[in-house]
Length: 244
Image (cartoon, rainbow, N blue to C red; front, side, top):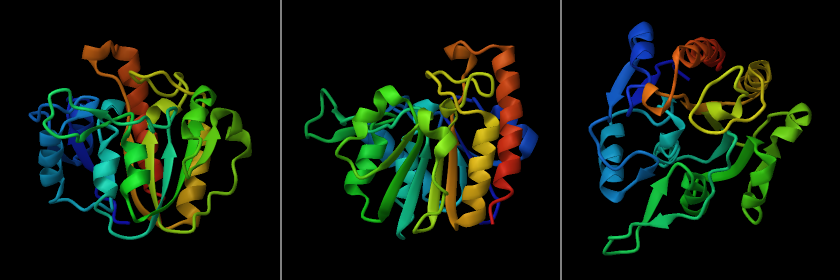
């Protein structure tokens, strides 16, 4: 996969990162109705804006509040794929509906996008979740997913998928020593993440990767949080360069 990352900007979280790396930036900060919940108008506008960029690629998608962007990217792949989600949360909540909506169109959200993908995407062949909070594992019961909680991190199966894989990484899967986010976090270490993803990249054809997670000053982030996350992003870039 050609290394040509795209930063999708909502909150200016990655402004310094974009300047340092020179990565392309798609500015979506002027679209209303996008934080945590994505209403119908916002979804249509986001779909229109990302249409000019390849779905098969590397996407940095701001904080975990915008993780639903994974659904918009994967909806455009158009080929059978396996989805690998590394996240402290399964993101399979039942969708909510707009209070004032004239029709019953569910709102896409950072907590429901994975359920919509499972229920509506004809191309997803299998779905693996890694690092899920054990207290939330019951949310995936009855769904066609392979779920490994943070208690399973030392005994994960070999990461070989039956189809080209799309990887979605939420940095809240990591322990606070290695990442700082505005959501509750897991216990995976950076070294565990690196070892696992190196194996994924070495054994599979990778269609795309998206990365979300972090914390802004507006959500309480401080200098030490920003330092840790800047160092983490450098490590992730090194990882992404190993995609075959």
